[in-house]
Image (cartoon, rainbow, N blue to C red; front, side, top):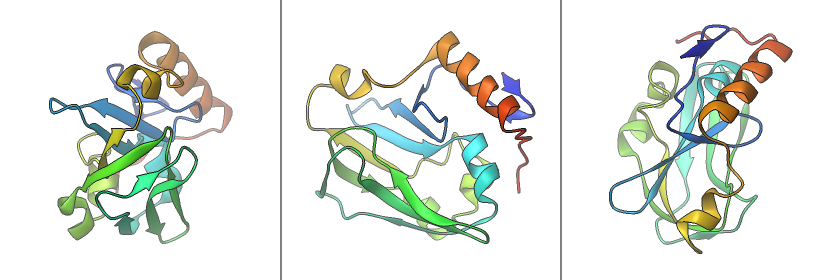
Length: 146
């Protein structure tokens, strides 16, 4: 599925700005990554830094930091969690976030509370698709892969 050339995955959970996606992993951790919209806005990603494994991150504090040719900033944390691990493939080759934004997760985290509580503030499925498309159209974002 797509909107304005921006790929959308209905099985993922999204924040309300459609910058971050979250996926439930088989081991109970949650993978966190950038959406196609987010990687397009950032431009070519040059550097990724993830907080140390075992670090507690309250909601609103960054899980990681991204630097691109035109932007540097946090990957916001959407719920209280502990960093489980970083994706070393992305650390070694940050451009993977531009090339494969839904395969190239940034970090795996473990929610402090229940999985249901962590995901409660996120959107998924048809509601997420409608919001994603609205964001792409409203901000005139036409996604490109670098």
